[in-house]
Image (cartoon, rainbow, N blue to C red; front, top):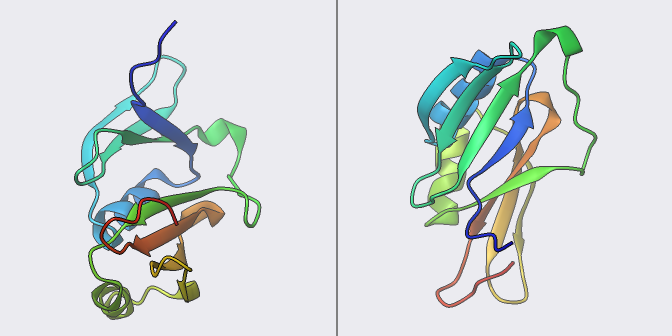
Length: 132
C-alpha cells in the first residue's frame, strides 16, 4: 500500500449552520457541498484556500452535543499578515484566546475558539520557515 495524499479530515459538530458560518464568515473557507449520508449524518465539505485537503463537518444530532476537551484538537491555518489578521478578527468581534506568540524562528501565532470547543491556530510564518 502507498498513500498518495490526504483528502479530508472529519470533525463532528453540534450545530452545522453555526459551524459553517464560523469557518465561512470568520476564516473565509468555501462550502463546496452539503449532503446527508446514508446513515443520516449531515455533512458539509469546506475548501481551504490554496490547499487540496478538505475539512468535512459532520452533524449527527441523535448522538448528542459535541464538547471537545480543552487543548485536545485544533486546526492550524497560515495567514499572510498577523497584524491584519488580528485587526480583522477584532472587527468581527472574535476573541483571541492565546497570543500573539513569537517562536524562535520568528513566526507568530494566535488561537481563537471555534464552535464546540475546537481551537483554531492562525500562524504567520517567515519566508523559508516550514514548521512552527
